[in-house]
Structure formats: C-alpha cells, structure tokens
Image (cartoon, rainbow, N blue to C red; front, side, top):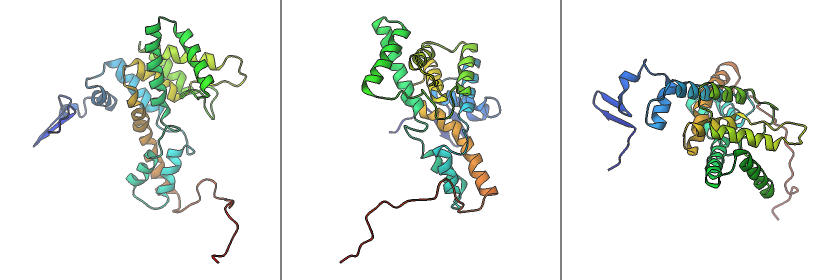
Length: 255
C-alpha cells in the first residue's frame, strides 16, 4: 500500500499535515502552509516571516534569465499559460536556479565538519576556499554576472539577524565570501542563491529542498511574464539574438 504523511482526502473531508484544509484557508498565510508542507509542522512567527522573505526574493530578475526567456519564447508560439510557465520551470538546472541546493549541500557538510574537527568557522572557510582552488571548482552562491553587491542578500541576512535565525551556516557563508575577496579589486558577492542556501540551512531544511524555494518564488514571476507576452506582444516575435553563422561542412553533392 502507498503511504503518505502529507494529505488525507475523503468525501467532503481534506486533512493536510493533520489540519483540516478549510481551517487553513483564510487563516494561515501561504508561506506558513509552505513551511507546514515541507517541514511537517507550523512555523513560528519568525520562521513564517523568513520563508515569506525568501520566496519574495526569488520572484523575478528581469527578462534575461533562462527561465524567463524559455517561458516567453514558448508563450510567443501561442500555447496556453501553463505550458509556457512549465517551459520556464524546465529551464531550472545546476547553472540557473540550482545554486541554492548545491551551495546548501556544501555549507551543511562543512559546518558539520567544523564541529567534528573542532576548528573555527574562519579556519574551515579558508580550507574550503583552498580546496576549491586546488580542484579548480566554482563555489555555488558566490559571484554574480551583474551585481557586485546583491541587494537581496543583505536584506535576507539582516532579516535573519533580526528574527534570531542567523546561525553557523550564515556565518560560514560570510567567512567564505571574505576568503574569496582577499586581494580582489572587483568584489565577488554572496548572491541571493547563496544567501537563501545559508538561511534555509540555519532553519534546518534539507539541502535537497533548495530548488523548491527558487521554483515556488520564480513561478509567480514567470506567470507575469507569460501573461504579458500573451496580452502585449505579437506572436512569433523575435526574442534574443537571431543572427546565426553557419560553421558546418561546405555545401556538397550526394554523389
């Protein structure tokens, strides 16, 4: 028998994580219900406010990210809204939208390692930095193609401090940022993905839920972009660069 601890549905009766759904409707904020679904319990006031802030920080970042380009391109073909939004969601991967999960995985492992080895967070951040350099690997959550100081990061970290949520993972992320910026002229900031990764780790979320926060927040933005594309733009319009240069084999005959 297939078992689930999420929702029980019977005729005229719906129970989610132990709560009747009609009691949740209009009473509990959406961000609290998200926490309930993913953690199995109701959040306290600080946790609810933090989750709401995280989701808001992910809603949109303009028309150039792959998720938006994919959604608007597919919408331009005349498909229904859900199809175009789904196209954008399918564009989420390790490079775009996946940094939260990958960063949280590293943070959670290294904070645990810090405790096991009895070293300071600063010492371990330096060790991780050296290891990444030695392996020539990038650190997810560090650096941004546009921002030298991601405004979303500062707000999330400040709020985590205000709500007494900030802990060792945020501290580790800040220490790692310091390592990356030693001797650099152009700053490499903790971006919003790195900030979310650190915050959710301090809140006790499994790193495997990292992409979920991005998906849920960004879906709202994708709906807005698809709707705008459908109501304001002409179908089959030119999106992005369209000039191409052929660099395949020279034209040839079959015989």
